[in-house]
Length: 294
Ligand code: GUN
Image 1 (cartoon, rainbow, N blue to C red):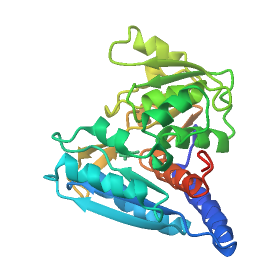
Image 2: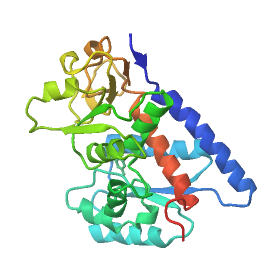
Image 3: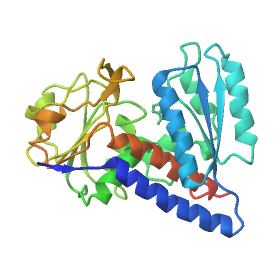
Image 4: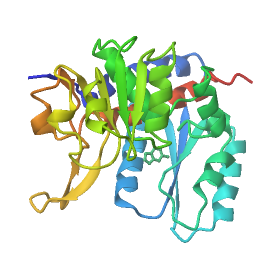
């Protein structure tokens, strides 16, 4: 059987390392890092993510502030709160949880966040700086995946990496991160809904990263024997046997793929906990002004 890449245990370890650094900072007279999160509406998935982000702040010794709006909030009101956070010296970094209601222009919201507090790494300045190899906040899911590969001793340099999906949050920044000489240093292909011969492209991968949001899409025939398979999918599918009424399903058909893979992430407990952990690391970097010194 393949190596099971345990994102939950790795994230717990990294949060303990962050907490140690925070206590050293506080002992040296610095303030605790402070993350704010804006949550609009009551989407079940977003509620869970934001709750877990607040819990992760506690585990790391950070302060956190949760700001909630009804899903009827106007775009102007949301932008006004963002402006307030941009200028609030007590807040080191903040996020606006996505998705947003349809009447709010998501790109306008992202671009209104001060890039120096954009710990999600979604602002075009951070996206652009990643693309040309400058220091910046890097989108948490791709950063979490690269960190998992590093901590499991999986070589990326010179290897063939195939990213399935081209979203702004995961697929595109994953491609950039794996491509950069100082990060993944891999040979990278991005495949998507209009790719011809998608199965054979995936079969070329030493590292296959699935981020398309389609449960069980990656099957054993798409995986090179011994490949590392990273599953970013977290789709809620109905499951009457669970108290919640649903379970999380990955983009990889784990049962068929695991026997072929050399290493694989589970869902849940793989990429998900690492994403939140990397948000903490970005918040620590924001507090320390690592990427954008004054
Ligand atoms: N929705 C799904 N993933 C994310 C994320 O990483 N950040 C934010 N802000 N919203 C999300």
